[in-house]
Every structure is written in structure tokens, then in C-alpha cells.
Length: 144
Image 1 (cartoon, helix red, strand yellow):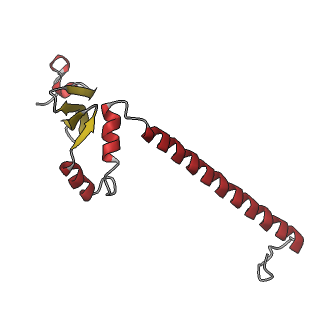
Image 2 (image 1 turned 60 degrees about the vertical axis):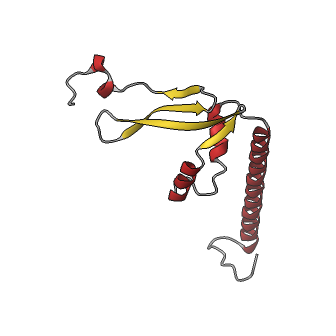
Image 3 (image 1 turned 180 degrees about the horizontal axis):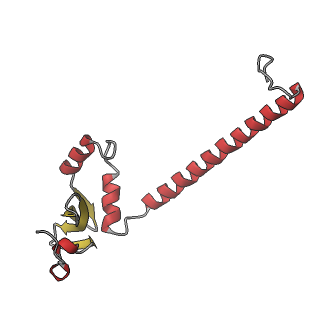
């Protein structure tokens, strides 16, 4: 504690020094916990990446993680269009997402994710099915 520190009213110099020392000790402990958590998370990520991907979605995520640009940026979108093919299970794959208008017609929702392999395989990993607008059995007077 410096002599230039202003001591709050009602506290002695010794009480203030003890409070400052306690705050510094808590801050150091918090920093150490954060560093330990980060090291643990990094170790878990390294162990996960050391194993081969278990499915097409994980293989795609690993491929997308190699993009050097910030997620959601125009550069990342361009990179994704240029590098749309990835290897998994001895085959080169490409991923296609299909979107569908929401019931209100104001937005879009993810309809399906399909992977196409160069060996002719086609794997659907997500299929939300039709919404009311596209479901003939549930058309209760919705506008066309």
C-alpha cells in the first residue's frame, strides 16, 4: 500500500492495508482459477482433436474451424464458398443446407442439412420437416 492511497473515512491505516491485501489475494486466486480452467479446456480440446471425427457434422465443424477469418464475416463466407469440400471416412464430402420461409413469411428457418459424398452416398443429418405453410394437411386458411 502506498502512502498516497486515500484511506476511506472511518478506517485506520492498518484496516485499510488489510482490506487491500485481501482484495489483491482474491484477485490473484481468481486469475489462477481462470488460467487453470483455460488450461483444462485446452487439454480437453487437444484430446478431442487427437481422436478422429465420429460423424459428418463433427468433420464439417473441424473443417470450418480451419477458416482463418472471424465467424460471420464476409471473408469467412467467401472462404466457405471456396473451401466447401472436406474429407471424412475416406471420401470427399460437400455440405448443403436448405432453408424454408417461416409461417409468417418474414424470416427463414433451417430446414435440412444434407452431405453428399463423391462416392454417391447422401446423408441427411438434420431434417425439420415442413412447417404449416408447406403442410397440405394443416392448411387452415393460411394465405398462399
